[in-house]
Length: 233
Image (cartoon, rainbow, N blue to C red; front, side, top):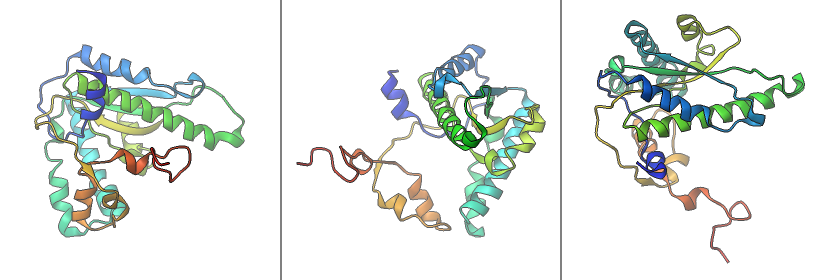
């Protein structure tokens, strides 16, 4: 698979086969992750690879629980009638063979304390780049992934930190399953800007539209000045 195809063909996967992922493939996606750019090459990332079946099941249960409690109920304020059908989509998550937990680890004293918020923002950008690399590499290898940001809503992933022995100073930023997916490839259709800008919490139909596709380039790209369409005279 070519790089462009891997990037544009990636999609979030929830159904996985229990087939273990070969260690060399796990290493390959991690190599892609640490090749990501970071501010002053500070590389503020660490990864916990979870393959022990009892731990995998606990991570999966945690993600499902926090998806329901923090994402669907609190953040999106989904009506009760919609929560159960939404959470049923996660029923098979426990059979994924591997989770990769992405942690922020500030190794370098790069700036005075007054700039700590700026450094954290830069670190999060770097961590996002690392996860994007990991997911594209996984797609190239025929593996599925899905971004879960739930731990940041739950005391910085306190439960996962205790479960996986992450030091107190560490911060869990995201988790992705990694495995051979048990669902067909998805087309990524274009969607109108109104699908995003018109979204209102609690509307399950609009939530489905929100997740359906990608915005066209001309909706998000400006040339020379914000608001100016590329090619505009």
